[in-house]
Image 1 (tube, rainbow, N blue to C red):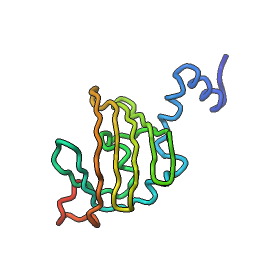
Image 2: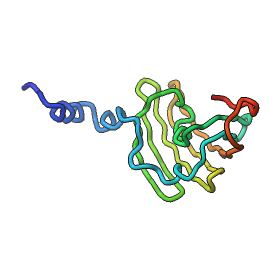
Image 3: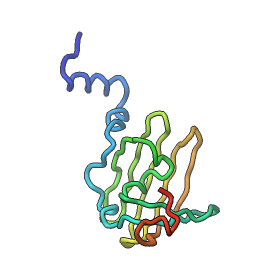
Length: 143
């Protein structure tokens, strides 16, 4: 049997590869996440237990979802979308996956709990993300 329509091919792929492949190809998050909408873009300081402070210029707060897979195009699935908390599972073909919960306490402070697989190794950490101000080279931002 030849599958001629895009819908027919999509259904065939879902049946053969599992549901994860269906959403992994879609990089955008839908619906918009309320917790991330309240966070401001800018220079953010990430503080994790046992590691040096890290400064990151965040143009879009959605980047906080994939701290260990920043350069990867990943598909995302929203697990929970509440006023100040969001949980997202993401999958990056060939690079791993993660599950992140972000709790926005204020527009300038968030708690991030993430775990998954990156570079064929498990990771898990909790971070405090605090907005320092606008991005700028004079503040030593990593881009």
